[in-house]
Image (cartoon, rainbow, N blue to C red; front, side, top):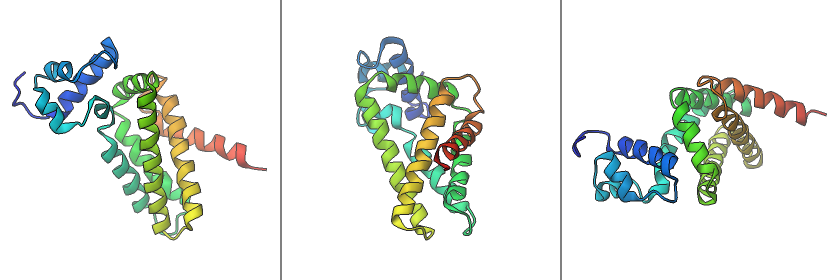
Length: 187
């Protein structure tokens, strides 16, 4: 594979994920990732600050899907109805990424520093969702509660999704998690 072929970031992500799964995250070096992708170490650092960031490269698209889904909701939609649009967007994003998501989740689960980075990503997402809900007129406290709830529902459903074999089940699992949430919060 030539260094000049397109999609260097995608090639690096694919190589890194394969190496992490094969030989372990801690044992994999940036030089090995670059070599496996047919690129240089210098090229790696044009795209990623460190090897950890390879696993979090899609965060901007992920965040964008959430916010577009909320923005597309009718102005009259209740907070969790607005978030449902985000759930639709995010589920579509992951439909063809099940294998990658599963391997990524396994890698992250075995490393506290990656778990911490994942939690930071989710917290930043929650703040963005809260801001989007507040912009729709929700009080800051209610927006934070709704955002934290939505992100938690997604996180629980996502963990279930990567542990099973149905690539298109994410949206259904989100709905199941929402239903379970309702059952534990009703008097």
